[in-house]
View 1 (cartoon, helix red, strand yellow):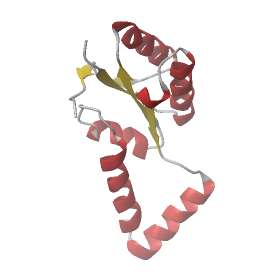
View 2 (cartoon, helix red, strand yellow; view 1 turned 30 degrees about the vertical axis):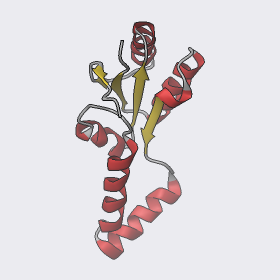
View 3 (cartoon, helix red, strand yellow; view 1 turned 180 degrees about the vertical axis):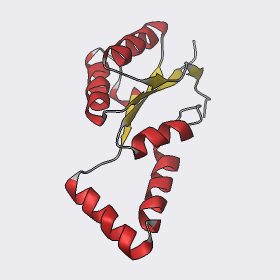
View 4 (tube, one colour; view 1 turned 120 degrees about the horizontal axis):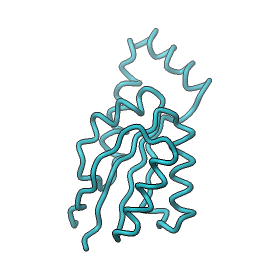
Length: 127
């Protein structure tokens, strides 16, 4: 069986972080679980306000664009709709599963943690 990938979206960033941690506790390898969420809180908000005033938000938009291009890893899915969840302050967990058991574990953990949107499992292209 080939490795498969799925994306799981959470409106609450903290719930996504806990779900990702739980997957690792359940036995998935740490490099098979990637969390995508905006970093920062108060300082980040201040930086965005300053950027809005100085450049009309150009710097923040470019940073977000490049993070989106670089951070999705090996996911075979179109992550653009999931990027919106991250932009709104949520989180997306990308999971690579090697076995059917890992897929089942990921599905159970993510849904129990409050995942509100997810892709199906798709084969990860070999590099």
